[in-house]
Length: 297
Image (cartoon, rainbow, N blue to C red; front, side, top):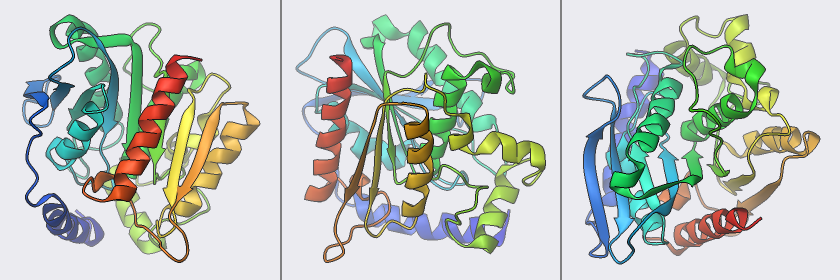
């Protein structure tokens, strides 16, 4: 593991523990925890959250967590996921295998296994597979973007050994404070840290072949799902959003690009996961409203 990855893991764990201190499961939420969705019994686990007062199948939000490809799990997003469920969705919140212990494209394989699991268990957990949305932030936004490209770009999908369930495409995606072109021209954390993260994540440490695979804007087609593209003033990944916006616009993909905060009152990277703050709740309201509108298009 690189020094950058080791430092990030330690610092982010401390900050996330402070963020979630004192939070508990809301009384109006029913949760199903630690359901195994893939071959790895440690990392291939997911939770399902549902509002207690609603029966039957609900539209689904699949959360792809962030963490620089080297950090994170479903526990860090459980309270965020449950606040989305309070907005009348079923939420699937999963852990995927991390670098450097497991390399690309393992998180995409895991994401696909989650979708396969959802089809197999849709009746048991009340999942409306005709209305599946995905949300990802930071590195999770990158993975969510790549998976959306796999679902909608057959030429790109041919680079992977797994197959998406027949006909599956997310109805819409929310990409939050994301990294979309980690091997593009706009640095995210600074060239040295970027290079160390990519070396940990990619088997060939950023070869020409990997460069052709890893940047989301390069694989957007007109079939890409509608996008709620979110960033904020104060987000160190903010320069990445226009790179994806350009590809969406050129391909005629419906999107809404929203920047939260202001120069006078800046926010911070993935602020929406801090559910105690009104800015986070506002963003989550907006994104769930976007999903509902996409259902009615």
